[in-house]
Amino acid sequence: MTTPAPGTLAWFEVATSDADAAQKFYGSLFDWTFEVNGPAASGESDYRNIKASGADGPMGGIFGTGGQVPDHAVFYILVADVEGTCADAEQLGGSVVSKHLDPGPGAPKFAYLRDPAGNQFGVFTPPAA
Image (tube, rainbow, N blue to C red):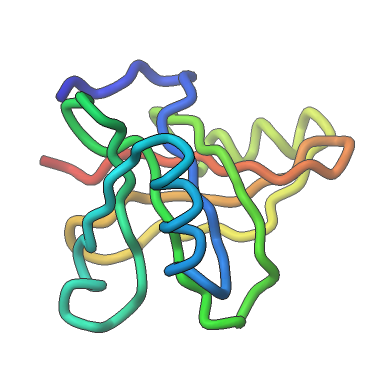
């Protein structure tokens, strides 16, 4: 699988209090398959990577929130510099919802932002190889 270029839509996430129902719905609707990844495999969180039929790798995920945050869907743009992108977004009238610049080994740096109209989206930088 090749890494998308910075500035491209590179991931999406469905956050839900009922990950099993979301998996059944999207899997049946689009013929997607799901795989538990990373810490979720050891029971730390409920995160399932989504793979389209015939795709080389995952394209998004379902995050089981356990009811801790409202259900939502968000898209992520790959960027070269999360912190710099956050600063640029604020200069352009957007806002930073949260930054995760030290997420731990093997995890991407990411942030949730809002555009000037209030729409939430995410930016991330892949973890170092």
